[in-house]
Image (cartoon, rainbow over all chains, first blue to last red; front, top):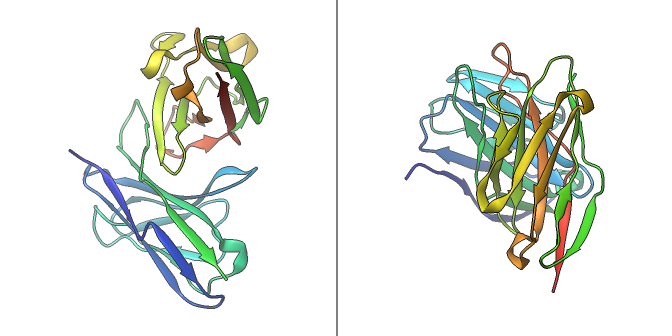
Length: 114
Length: 115
């Protein structure tokens, strides 16, 4: 069955370190998204991609970057981790085209920045 | 810009009681609307979606939602709550036109089911 996987599931890092969170999907979807989830804020979009070599900023993109070199993967990089980036991170993917825009979510990565 | 408001960050019901979770949207045209559920320590799972085919939408686990354009609402209901329904529920909206595939999420409603 098609799925989205995220790794690691849990990560502890120190302030100032570079961190990369992996996202891999086997749906063959063109669209991929990264969100962060914080209490009281719901899900907020960090970055998204509509295809290989395409990347776009979401509403909370400062301090984060992504790159899309193939259809299956969209890694999220925290350039210099800050305590404010302690959060749960979710990756999602969806199809391109008219009609339904259902996004399918990964299990999440819980990140703690000390 | 589209927005979604979920009234009530926390709803508590007794097992067997009606579940009603409220969602209102702000959009210039009728959007696509979604309800997702998140169980503890898991990702989001689609419950149901409205894509203009029918105003009453049935989803998984006995949930349904009705699109009301005049009220700009898409409230989620279930006639009889079960303990396994305890989770966080998110309403989301998407622009039906063009090539905008982004979803805008509400802040979520945590549902507690009491025995």
